[in-house]
Image 1 (cartoon, helix red, strand yellow):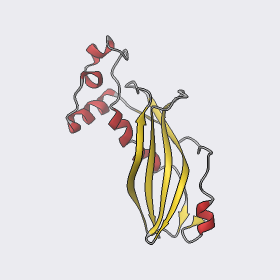
Image 2 (spheres, rainbow, N blue to C red):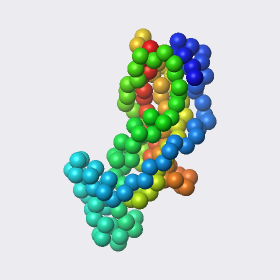
Image 3 (spheres, rainbow, N blue to C red):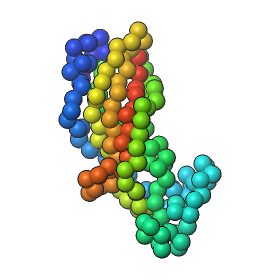
Length: 152
């Protein structure tokens, strides 16, 4: 654990090494259907199991934006552990890419690495590269540059 006041310790969090994997979560068809209903994205490749079975992916696939939304779930399991925080805010993201489909029924997990820290009057802005993978797949399904403002 590093203190929010320890600028050298914060800078040392930047690394090219990936973290350990998070816990995994399995995405089922009911979850995808609920996401489709909420977002009004009912494209057949996500919700029509019969039609999708004959489609390009051999079954339904998880929405890319559903996969992106899981970043919050996974980031809650990832570091850094910083002492002395007044709060943590999702500051957004610089870019994200969908690199491989996520078949419904897949188990997902994630890992990250801190690529940049910027000191601000209100705290530290941490940029992390997050990779969400189908368990067992080397290629990530999605990568994201996530920004978190650690208030201190």
